[in-house]
Length: 396
Image (tube, rainbow, N blue to C red; front, side, top):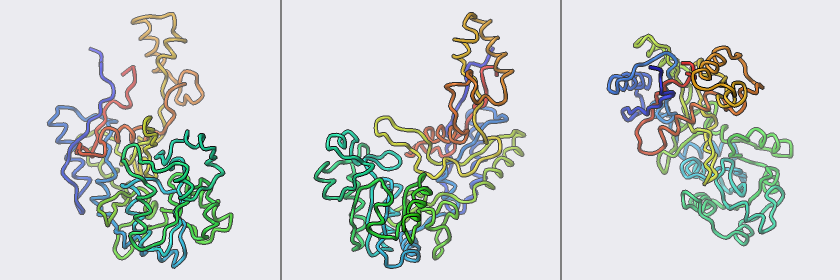
């Protein structure tokens, strides 16, 4: 009988990971145990994905607000610090902000509006139209923002992030002035010392600030790039990709992940004789239609992956073939024609009409998003995801 199932995705349970655990051994054991318990066979080009969180936990890659404060003081001294373009997140930024505040004398907090970089809204964009406010040119004080829009709570979290972030800074007796602007240069009217907290636009923001008179210009990926008094660190991403661990500490994005995925691939090959692809994944990259949140708060979807996951899909759109190339065929004749077309397709379909409508994204971004949606961020307890049939097509 022909196969009637394509891609299969399984969330795998594993032990709670603690510092010092062998993440490689735990992942391999979990995959083999699941295969035995659930009765599936491990094949070539199956994929094992591992959430970045358990990798960082095994590494013990943690830091406290005191570590953050020490690094911030070493870079800014007693200067007023412009903290600009942070995302609105209790999990992602609140503890970082506490550490920044603890290392500062005064903070000017500049928020983008109507939303942050990843789509968390302070106010609905329609409200801006009603008030005649242009978010690309207009700079608002906190008082002006409140007069126009009042107090708004986040759609999902129920938090007024303006009050919340301001309270985190003032908790340490630090003066906090809040302004609203989407122009990085605005902050230079308040201070020449700036910590830009955007993620995917940080290089442009820093370039603009330096070109317009900024003096001490840093981004989150410049904080905790080295150990501070024995802290965890990430030499490439610093605080980017960190998550709240406790009210006083964060778990950083994992570091040096490539040897981990390569080792897991090798160990699985030794155990099964199969070449399984492996990747570490963080946030997926997709947009929520209700909250308008573009999920990706990590600096990358995948910090490390094995070689077989490099590149983008090279796929034919079946419905295009059925409606155009083989519109006069039906049944088995249509199936055979499409199968033959796929078997003989070009190795690079970029620009081909037959591939239009397929997703032109990197494999790691697609698979990472699939994995993130499978494992979730709650209590599913499945930080390892096992994917089969992802590289199969209609002819397999």
